[in-house]
Image (cartoon, rainbow, N blue to C red; front, side, top):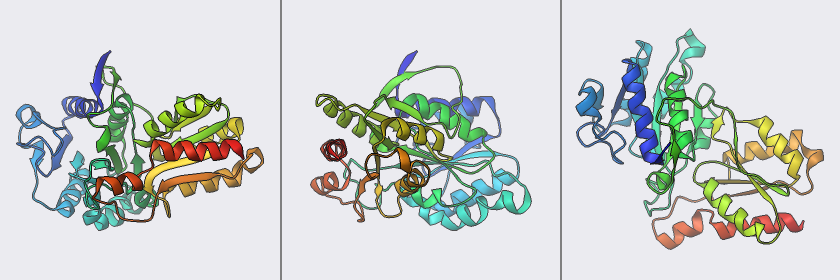
Length: 324
């Protein structure tokens, strides 16, 4: 298998879906001539034409509303937000119309919103957010957060096939930094199935997106101290794999829930509550959460580093759990 970056895997998956299904088309700001803010759709307009790779005006509301209307007419639009933060401009169309249309009328809304998210590059408060928990709360939406190139390709294919609106969070810090073996042929990766990124016996870290690699590096440090840490990558938050989480908790008995989003109202709270309700008797320590503070993402590199959980932060939390 060829080794590809996270970005290349997403681009390859999208290209394959457009080749196999004429209903699939791309729309967004600068996705055509320019090839997208991060070059995911570079060369797409030359291959598929301007009618299937649409450069849209600077209006996320128009992009999501247009995608919803096209989906109602039987198309399968894939809309790119240049940054995940900007999807809030289209909140009403997404959560009031697209998310509820199937419930109201039985009409599927097969749209995918590609959302470059996350920090690590000093983008500041308007270009670095991880707003997945805001949408995980909305019935009718699915939320996907791949961490590996292989998962990014397979989950995007699944998202495009899905009859529901799917928010596909692509962590920008992974685009060109993470590489992995990715099959050339088309394949799908099912929603709602977590992946064991690292096996362990003493403590479970439940996470997703870029934090998978932060957790893995911290787990490596703990291994040198004879503490075995399992890293469980949820891959999708809606639906999320409760069975895999509970099985890991039962096996390891101590849990750290880790995410880059802010702590209050973050999806980690849902996971922690589920563990407390359904696996309390298997716990040997309180469920621990580690997340960003309740603050906008800072511009300054030093402050952003303090904001985003770092390897040393995770290692410290794991040591506290190990000693409990």
